[in-house]
Amino acid sequence: MQNSIAAGRRLAFRVVCVQLGFALLAAVGFLSESARAALAALSGGGVVAAATGILAVRLFAPGPGSAATVFGRLLVGNLLKWGVVALGLYLTMVKAALPALPVMCGVIAALVPQLLGLHEWFARAEDR
Image (cartoon, rainbow, N blue to C red; front, side, top):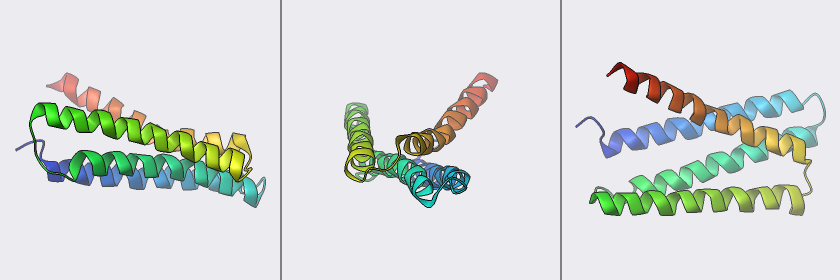
């Protein structure tokens, strides 16, 4: 089978790891400003990586199902993902009072691998 659940789990794990790597790169970039800015960038990227992990667990953990069931998992997982992102951004910027610019740069840095992955996926789809 070309699109197995195990392949989806492996891909989700790789995406979360790459997101954490990009967040770490953003944090290293902000380290020259201050340790607090670096922590803010790392926490912003960490929020996105955690949210992607929650989506992956929701989508792939239960096992196979009908198309309607999997679509429902995808919808609920995406709602959970963006809820976690919103809550995480609130906690980092309001409750922890971390600077907003590094937090948002960490979020953007963590979302870049998804965009690159989509670009690669579309490029492969055009070759078929």
